[in-house]
Length: 215
Image (cartoon, rainbow, N blue to C red; front, side, top):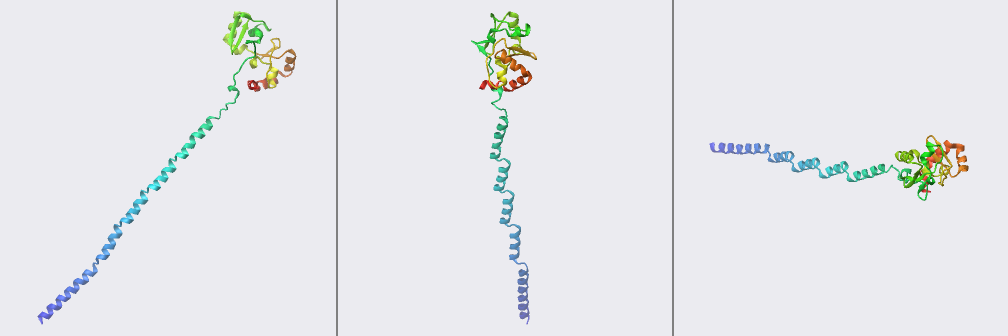
């Protein structure tokens, strides 16, 4: 009877151990471990944080070499806002006969003596690829100190012609000083036409000069 009781007790103990073992199923622990340390999930998170394609795209947007390459071209266009065909690019020249300006007339004498005075080959000055002759050394030195003050306007070409958009030769007797500047014309008849509207003709000539030298 005692033996039967012990056998029954042992069987009950074994059954109890089986129940306890069933309550702590290793399968459940394995599932929990997979959720907590899922290498694929971590790898996905890592890929999102350090995606080289995404970074490369951002880098391309921020430092796009093609976009930067267009900047110098725009700047170059801005820098070419200066027109190369402006009048400043035209080399100014003076009307001469055999290389001598105003047919050898003293340019300073127009201002000092209010008339054309023939120059002397003893007193010359080279300026603007022309030889300027003077009646005396004093006039020569005055001219040399400030050629632009005494030289005729529009390179010594006819003031009337320049106002009309072309050039023509001049003669020393067809002259006039206006506002401290010397103007010459083709002849005295043309000068009378020019004098009909001196301010207007000067304005037109100033607008045309030195562009008329290209004609």
